[in-house]
Length: 236
Image (cartoon, rainbow, N blue to C red; front, side, top):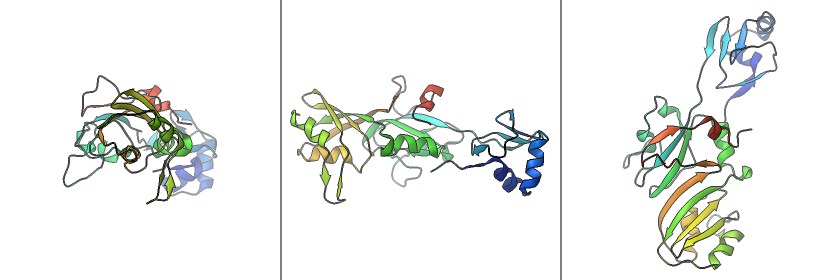
């Protein structure tokens, strides 16, 4: 879901149904402001969150939203579902129905879930090319051994999709608990990787996405807006 970006003159021309020559005149006369600043450059790039005024009339004022949710087990990462409560239903914000999920979590996985209406921001967090790590705490049915560490680091081949996972980091916390960092989000990836060792995952919790860490003050099911520092993470 990419953010819509365009040259300022093209945006105003399309929005007000006037030709670009007239737009250039408006810019030259100082009749256009973008994000509170006088705009004169026709090549200025604006997006769906740029605040744009023409002759003191607001023609675009959409606000970007960035939300952190502590997802509970048993809630589905979807906007609509016939059988389960959705993460959207847990949110209290007015614009919740305009948000999309940044990296879904399985029904039985808890922890950090991010939601936004900014497609450019979410792409930079989730696309494997940006190499943003997602940290999970994993509880296993059977004991762990050091062999797991090298197997995860090499990546694993899944014949059904004919893909090899990117290298992942595994740290053994205790006999039945591991911390795993992924740099992609394949279908049931962690469960399937431990499945190679015939070791069922009995608990899965996402702790962080890059430098955005689940707020420990958020109870399960609670949410809050991201801080400006959190929003800036990986956004270029």
